[in-house]
Length: 175
Image 1 (cartoon, one colour):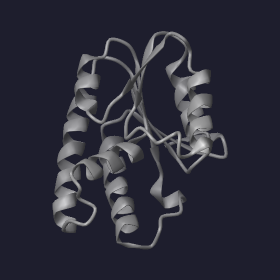
Image 2 (cartoon, one colour):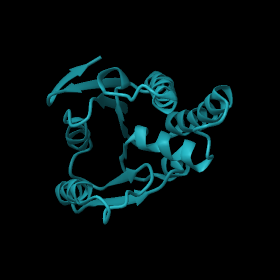
Image 3 (cartoon, one colour):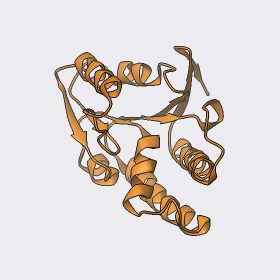
Image 4 (cartoon, one colour):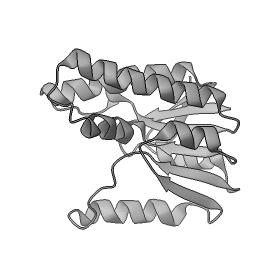
């Protein structure tokens, strides 16, 4: 089973995704750059709270290279969050200021590799993402680029999933 869980910031989407995975052995994938928790104590507290509520049977992997994790998984996988993964992909290529077509090609190439690995994964996978239509995106070039890229990424991943769940204010709508 492959499920994409989407919603706005602090909608409850990660909590819902964790419940879908359950309490047995699983791999939690922090899919993006590790934030500077020393510079942002509020972010550090949020990460600590997320870690504390995960079952002890879960292992954590912090990586931007998602396809190998999916191909090698022996237990259900929870990927959180495609928005941070997308940011990491564009950051790693130093591509925020590049030509929009080149950035789109880079992200769609990475999205295709992710979808291929997701489609062949032998275990259940739950992916968390932000729904760009529900969030505040700054109206500058990078903000618009992020919104457009995440929208395309979400569409590609959703097409490879069995279900999509929209979470708003902790309530779940299965699409």
